[in-house]
Length: 407
Image (cartoon, rainbow, N blue to C red; front, side, top):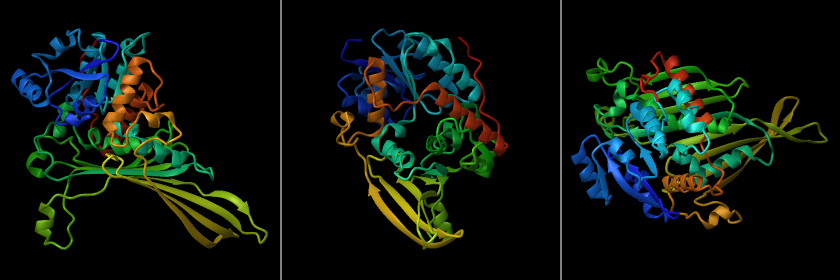
C-alpha cells in the first residue's frame, strides 16, 4: 500500500460490479487490484471483463498477497463469518456485504472478536450502502430534527424485486447458504425502520407472514422465504412494518388474470416515518394546535437514479378532544449531495451512487481521516441480525445455520 492508493479485491460471484469496481474507478485512492474464486477460470473471465490485473487461484492466495489492503466480501451469506475472520487475521480491511452473518450468534462472535476490537484492528464495515447517500441522511434529518419536535411513533419500509429477476435455483433460495428474502433484500426494509426508530429500540415481531418457494421446489427448501411481511412493536410502544419480495408477480389489472400473473411486478421502494402529534400552541377559544409530521422517501434503494422526500406536516385544531380543523403543509426535497454549507459537499458529487458514497467513508476510515459521520458499527450489525432471528422465529422458520469455523 502506498499513501495514495488502496488495493482491493472483489469476488466474482458478485453480479454487481457497481458495488465496488465502478465506484473505485472514480476514487483516486482505490484500485481493484485482484480477484479470486473457487473456479479460477471464472475468475480469469471476470478479471478480463472488468480490467482487474491479478487473478488468484484461491481465496487464501489472495489473502497472502501483500499488495492487497482491503477485501470486499460478496460471498454467499453462509461464508461471511469465516472469510471475514480470515481476512482480518491476514490484516486486511473488510467491506462485508449485508447481512453481516448467517445469524445473531455469528454476529455477536464476529463483532466482539479480538481481531475486530483489538487496538489497530483492521476496519470492518457491513455494506448497507443506502445509508451512506445524502438522500437517506436528509430523510432522517427531516424525521429526527422536526422544527416541531416529537418522536417517531410508526415506521414502514418496502422493497420488491420483479418475478424472473432470480432463478429458483439461485443461492438466495438455499437454506444451507443462509438464504431467504429476509437475508437478502428484506434486510434493507428492516434496517431502514430500525434507523428511523433509533438505536436502542428493540423490535419485537407481533405478526409475520412469508411466501414459500413454489410447490415444485418448496419441498426441498422448506425453510426458505421468498417474500416477507412483518409488524413490530418496541418496548416504548413504537410500531413498524416491513415488506419485501424476491418474486413479485405482475399487478396489471387491465390484463387477463393469467397474463398479469405471468408478468413481472414493479413497486417503488418506499420508506415512511410518522411522528407523534405535537402540541405547538393553545388558542384563546380553548382550541389546541397540534402538528403531525409524516416523511416519505421514494426509492431509498438507489436514490441517485431518482428519489423524492415528501415532508407533510398535518396541522390539527382540536377542541375538547374533537378535531375542528385540519390543513396540510407539504414540501418536496431532493438531496443528491450534502447541503452547500456542509464541507462534505465540496468532496461529494451529485452523480455518486450509494456505493461510491460508501467507498468514500470506508477509505476515509482506513486512512484515519474525518468522515461524514455516517457509519455502521458492530453493535448495529449485531442488533440487525438479532432482529432477523426474532423475525424468523415469529415466522416459524429456523435461524440460518451457524458456521463451525473458529479462530
